[in-house]
Length: 364
Ligand code: PMP
Image (cartoon, protein in one colour):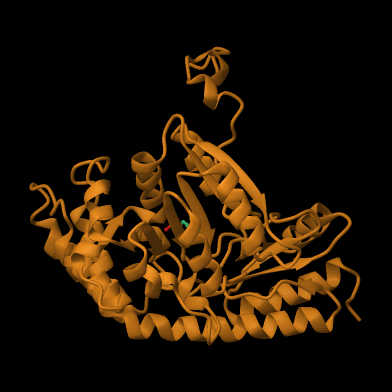
């Protein structure tokens, strides 16, 4: 059917010509440590509860779901704590949809968003797709954000949206609360703190949630894809002033969150303690990997997430390919010379360590 007809022949928007889609390779490998997923599948008990929940929802699927996802939002607010209520929380299909809705309300033609890179690649992609301008500011050598540089950039650019990712992907860097506070003080528009990896922070690194009462234009985004091991369920959420939730209603599609998604996410929340137990193991595994990599002389960025950025390699692609040849898929991302590996099970990490020593010629 294709007959030589291709993307170039279609009347797509001029600003989308030449753009690339988000593209983490989905390869069938023994050890997949490339998309920051949680390696622990739902326990039998959780899987059975999910099945019961879905069966319950099944008999009502002739009806549209609760458009406001009220029950789920109350559960998420309770989980977040900080005195939050359902009216301060909003949910969607992954935090990517949350980010898209934010851009749809607060971005758009003639507006611009600012990010501190390297950071999550979807921030500029969603920004551009919503026809919003993108301003990229460089992170420091330690992958943090220089407050003075940020203040100047914000004063000069006057961005409508500022993205702060903490812990940051792909570097793993968490931001001190003072940095977020200083940015929120000077930003003229919305400040979005992407906390997709919040649960993996090390002791003593606070969440931006505590700043919400002081800054009505601050948004904290979260996801159930990582700590809750629900990447396949697609459930992201945010906490913000209730007025922000009202604003998002202007762009959300009616009934965007299926009845199945709502019941699955609610059931996962009932298993918070069990799921966060796995997070503790992953944090320990992460800290052990950081120490091990440093022992072998690799450069490693401090990590508050479920992945580690390490390097540096004159030819990182060769290292990435060498690992893949041994059945270990990691991610070729981050500044030149660096690679990112997601924390998996102890067995997966052992396979990764073994393969890395082999590929880099450090094996005995
Ligand atoms: N934010 C960050 C920083 C991420 O790394 C990711 C996923 N890799 C997301 C948001 C999106 O997650 P999801 O759509 O699965 O909630």
